[in-house]
Length: 521
Image (cartoon, rainbow, N blue to C red; front, side, top):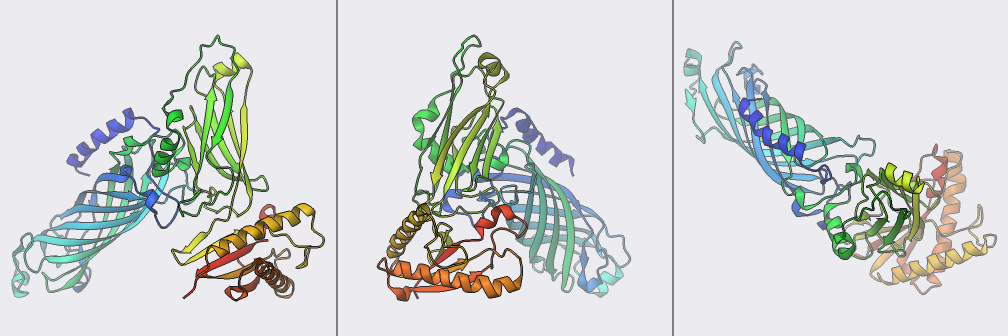
């Protein structure tokens, strides 16, 4: 890396040391396709890199290295949209004199004006990644403006080669494609995100008679988000609330969020109090339709002398297992926004209740003062019928596990009264949802859990049983005033399990009904 590039890093290093570490981490929505809500002013980034360029070679020269090793540097800007980095960059790779037998170049320079498309993959997308590491693959398309001087040799003259090529000269302008792989490292804020990168570059050159040119580069760089100061959050990176969503949450809780925490003197004997407010308790439908998509949790901690040691927000699934967790140290965030996803990206089930548990470990001073070693507050959120998008504006899915049947039957005579009532509530809600989409066809897919994990059980027992249950549900919806012709019933048996066979605790997720809602042609 050149001294010039090293000097450029100095202000970013200083910012990294002196700026607060509660700023947003490099954004990764955890979804492949970004949404409008993922677009915010904090996404603007600048970056620079420098490193080593490996010798250039051409296919029509039998891959003989035309140059010696060189150096590579670049500068660019772009926008992070939900984890997709869309950027423009100038890149320059400069090579020295070729030393291999048959090499023609005295020097060679690639001047690239490129468009880059990369994807930030962090713990938000792959839960097993450590919070400090990001994987960033990418592709680029560039205009390559070559400059070079050839050896003034007999061979060069016999081949009719130009003795030199200047910037933008005819025959030295071509397109270049690039594949890149990057590992980025998060050190607490968005002012200094260093990365290491390797690139494979390919272009077709006509200045030496036509040929496919290839070269590799290895760089060290830094990316910075200068507008990240607009958004702050005390949560850990992997549990960070999305910038756009947090901004909305602050508006909705304007009065509370403007209040600074009031710290009591250590002599005060008032007990610490923990409370929780939520913008939604029922009909939570996180399907990006603009209605009840986000659960905004507002924790409140009062009567404290110092910021707590740690805090944790747990969202538990209907069976009491951890579904989503947010955690951190120091003061609790003003709001925690839940998008209905689990830590692994799993969607909530329809018509189910998810418990919220907030746990706070007070500071040592407050523990000594009050004797309270742990504070816990609980609440719950019940889902409605979220329509998960399969194809935007065309195809959706509703996943339900609150339609109960008698064991190994498609009847309802042996289930409890509570289960019968739950069936009624679920089917009534489904009927209303379907009636609200009269231009759609509905496929009812029944699923079961393959206990023995054998094809025989699936073929002989589960598929026939799930087919009968799907048909029974179809009939009950018809009885609620829906045209039978819009329905199709399919028994899927043990296909497409949500929980692995080894994961017995989550077998309940496999026993479900999926309603595929698709617009009519």
